[in-house]
Image 1: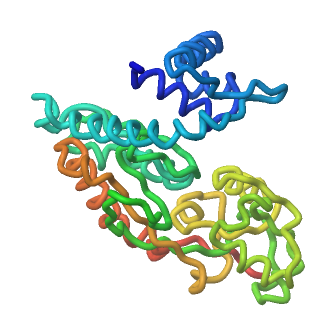
Image 2: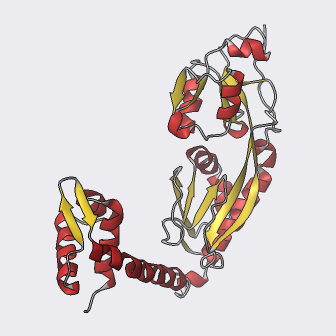
Length: 306
């Protein structure tokens, strides 16, 4: 039996996605192409690999057996791809593209400071991807990740960039009688929806509200900031977001119990690549220079209390 890795890659993608449309989107090809490659693979191995069901594709027993071997080939192909990224002449210099993935709030923070990050690195092309999802460094879905937790993944090298403080913010037009916990309970609060209840500050808000959920809920930090800016209510925001917005005012001080560490993640096969190493150095320098801002010590506009 002779099979090509490209066919097995299509097979694995369909096994993971479960339907032709999703697999085609993931692979960047058409539905007929996926179906044709799967049929060719089944003919090559002499067995049916999927049951065609009304709601998608399900692996047969033969397909289940093939998955393990295909995943071994996938890991080998990914490793070759990462290692070969550093073999070309251009790769030995700080030139090329570096893909950076971070949450939407931190991506916006970095985007506003790109001139500082790119100083002396104009030969590097930066791609910024805002996402909550953990991009796969092994498959080079990103070269660098910034996350609040360190995943338990083999081959990942981490570096702590800094700590982010949080505080309560309100629109400058919102009148507050006082900022005591009892008075704050009477305010309209904005927070994250149930799927994003793990976000920083949500447990603190629920505790303040005696377990009640905020009256307004979103799924994105930037939308949360805009909702507060519109005067719809109060919310916990990272200090680098709230303090930078002239339409917002901090209510009280930094919340000592709400903070997040920011970690820089890179695959061990890529960290010595000159352009990746240079981008890492730039991020470390940027976070060091902005430490006071990240920790909420750069000066905040405080809400007036009547």
